[in-house]
Image (cartoon, rainbow, N blue to C red; front, side, top):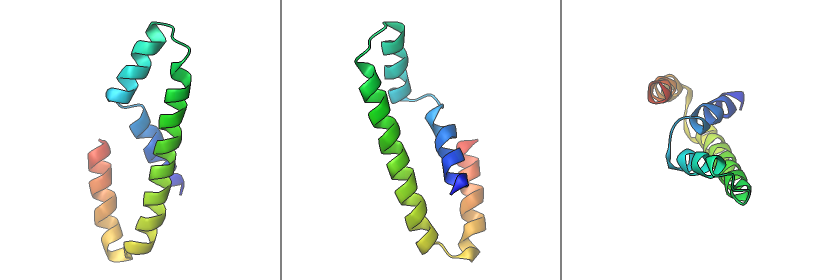
Length: 76
């Protein structure tokens, strides 16, 4: 489970549309964006948690190494 948490933190801080929206709102000092950013964080955590639990049940040990290599290449 720690692997998916580290992956989630890595993905959260890469550039993307949600991060651009949050950055722009932060620069403009908008306080209402806090709920949006919190909602996105909770949604990402829920999605990554459910995908990791489902993947743990579906992926056998033979495919795990290849999946780990592909996931690492994607993050890099």
